[in-house]
Length: 121
Image 1 (cartoon, rainbow, N blue to C red):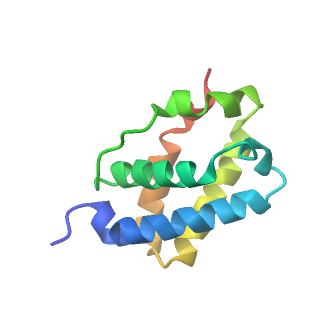
Image 2: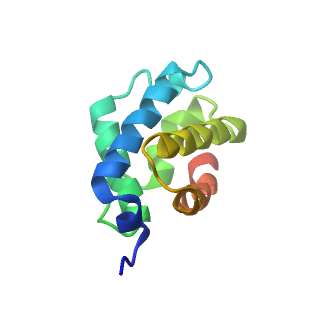
Image 3: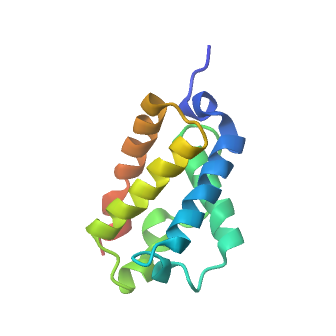
C-alpha cells in the first residue's frame, strides 16, 4: 500500500517533471518572470524539487527556510494575486505530467498552506 503523497504522485521523477513545466510556464508569464530573472534557475529547480518532495513526505529539505527564500520576491512586490498565478501554473504543470486530480488537489492544499510564510514580511 502506498502511504504518502510523494509515492502516490510518482516520486521524484514526477515532481521534477512538474517543476520543469512549472518554471517554463512562469518564465513565459509577463506577470511573474520578473521575480526569477536574476535567479540561478538550475539551483532553484533543484531546491524546489527537494521542497515539494519534503512537503509530500518523500525526502528532507536542506534549502533556505521558506520565508527567507522569498525575501527578494517580497521586496520586488510579490503579492497574493501573483501567488495565486504561481499556484495556477503549478496546478497546470501537475496536470501536464499526469498527476491525478485528487492528488493534485492535495498537493495544492499543501502549497496553499505556505502562502503566509511566502508573502508576509
